[in-house]
Length: 252
Image (cartoon, rainbow, N blue to C red):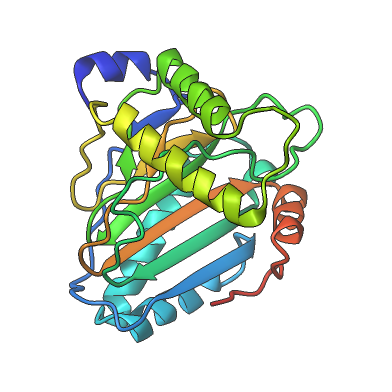
């Protein structure tokens, strides 16, 4: 990040940051199939073993190397996350395996909204997601999300979803979203993007006005991308319920 951006984001509660420690990446070159690993549950459970087995089974990564990278990623993110042991006693871990496709040839610029209902008295604590690309193109992130970006997004929403009392059909809504996506891609084409190096972990907030705009990259090659976020057991249980996902059991 440039010096100016670093100054904007100074402090542990910053909307966007690159963590100092880089991961040692496993020797991985390909994805065998498109599949997603999800885990909602307590951090004390031995779910990282299942995650490493998943990664080794669906890519050409050796199991031991996959386990080492996953363990390092999780430990680094958990240590960096603000809160006491109870406030980050649970997590949502995702490993997304992709093969080349053109679904994101046009960026899907967005901010992550609220992920779960907050525990009482912790509503104003900034919450973050941690991400790292193990293989393939990295996530696209604005270096700095400005008030002008928010104004432009609001303008796009009003343009493509006018509040005129007329309801759109599902097909019309899908078309309007596609048009909004293309419009925002054009409006934001000159935004400066964060440069991510191999093994770098990025932390970015969600559910806040200044949470970074980001998008999936154009998937022009096989890709392995991991994210994790933390919360109390009650918060992550509620998140799992919102997503109709089991708590404490990995899924894929």
